[in-house]
Image 1 (spheres, helix red, strand yellow):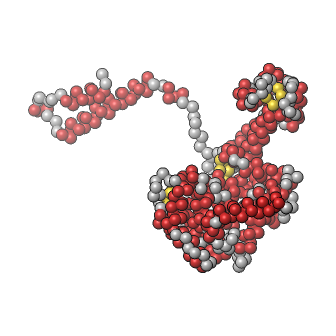
Image 2 (cartoon, helix red, strand yellow; image 1 turned 90 degrees about the vertical axis):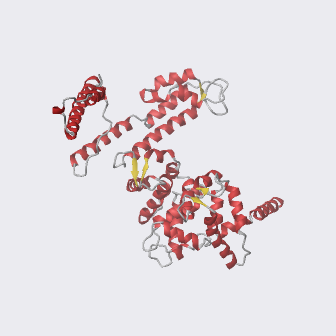
Image 3 (tube, rainbow, N blue to C red; image 1 turned 135 degrees about the vertical axis):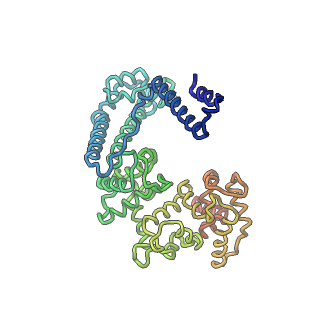
Length: 453
């Protein structure tokens, strides 16, 4: 019988002897005693019949405390040994060369253009001869992934080899980044990534010309891009997986190419010309040479046509020191304005535009910022544009879910976030938007003139 039924019956049975009638307190005490007795028996019975909980594996391991020096050292050494073992499991240059030789030897004609091809049968043969380290690459899944439209059912040897090279590079990079993961939790703090990039500089030929005195500023410039885009919640750490998944590391390691074109260097945030450009702009804005930027100094950024209302919001929301902005905060500002199509940049600007901190922009918010644009237009002798017209255009462009509110997600989904934000914060940007048709026509005329000559 269940203990609850026993307890219920015992308490429900009436006491007919008036001499033995119990007080209310005695009844409560008896109730508690019975409850404790039967509940303990029931719980003990469950223990005896259910032993599966003892088989649950341990899944949490406490990190050593700061004063547990020996445990910390043991953990560091064990991680180092683990990473060394993983590194030895990767293909080295000689093994990669041998793999290419085997693939080339087992190619199946005819070639497609200049690309050698291999069928599944020979693909498996190469896998048997290539050694145990290559076993993970020679699977039906990998072959099917690279199989496209070849009428003979073959894959490109070059595509497969590039796939292997990419996988090896990713694992090498993962191991290299993990060596800087001091916490051993799969993420890098800002100081960890700074150390990684600082030690990487001597291996990048495109950075040979950098003065060592500039290294700290270069590292700060490079690290900010990772954290601005990969740490939107500003937790101070980035997952190593996220670093590998984005293209930033590819851009950084592209600087190993000694013959990198000038155009590629100019568009690469991590190149020496780009880093010097950003830092040079910062120094030019810093008129009083105190290493910080005031609101008045920042107002000269770009075409010097950003509104005071927007700049006020920058200094209200961003980290400042005695009302002035340091280089790190300036880098976030630059990254946001130079990448306005990116969600992280829109999130940065949206926070500044959301003056009521409601999570959306309404007519009041739009009017608050556009009024400053109208005032600048008057100062420059331009005829002010009606806010009502601009407001309607903005809502038509964004097409928000709520017809009276524009959320951050609405901006991102519309693919018009860069245009909307430019209209609200920068007079030059608004003028360009207003005269876009005339500018396009002018460009077409210039192109036609060039063609005629």
